[in-house]
Length: 383
Ligand SMILES: [Fe+2]
Image (cartoon, rainbow, N blue to C red; front, side, top):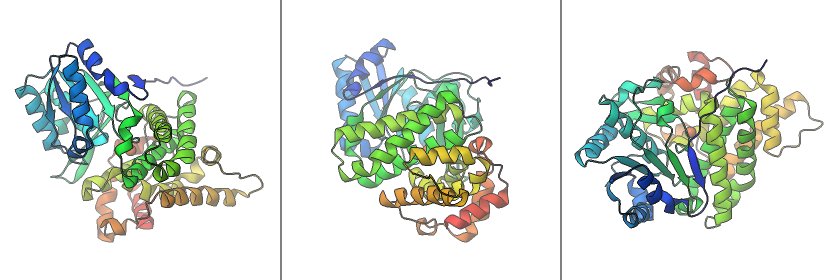
């Protein structure tokens, strides 16, 4: 008999121009004053001003909080919650990538629960849902706009915490591929590979299910077919739309099946050395697959097919090599060629990185059990 599986997803509107619905949705939530959470890069690209105009046109006042780092920090969440309260806001609109959206989720939690953000780490630790949250993603990767995850950095301890709760699923996501036209090639690569990792980790997760598999596999196909083309043709809206769809489908899959060792280890790295999330994932991906492979061979072979590999006639060993080579080739062709050492990671950092990764909730659904020594070996291989 099939196991019980739950599928959580927000209402979302997908397509060019969906951003223009922000005013109507905010009004539906009874908004009088909106807190827009964004970051300096998104302001420079013009998307924050665009959303403010849309809210203005609907007669809704807004204030902007943009003190958000690429790895959003606990103290930024606390300042944002203070700003939300001080300005008498009643609805939050996040405009940006995972950083702005995760920070917005944190601000919502703190505003309604009046506790420090770090107290909500882990699974299902948020009691009261935040105020209405509208997410407008401007990258095609994080999927924070559809996910039950918020990742917040604690620079004092040099760790990232994962808050996993149905209460951090936004009330609506307005997913407008036009907002991704302003991403530079490296950001397109890092966020695209992040989405690929979401899809792969969801597909091999111990909580995978047929309802999620189709989304994960379609995301893998779309990324394989469109990531490199998009990097070469950044202003092609059709291609941007395909990557945005891939990100959405990967998000639907991982939000419900959770992730695995790549994310657990990337969170540890990102928290310890303040590195970009997508870059950490890309560096670790093939090394984690190499470790996990024997435990989920059938699933990895299906991933290989989704990546377009023709493995007919190959031995088991050749199939494994073909998959690993394909993943490595894709990330290199996308321009992510760094090793862990080139990010500034030292061999002496590895024990501490492994200790922290072992505590990450994403590890729970990795297809193969890992102990601290296994994690240290994978980090060392990626060095
Ligand atoms: Fe991710």
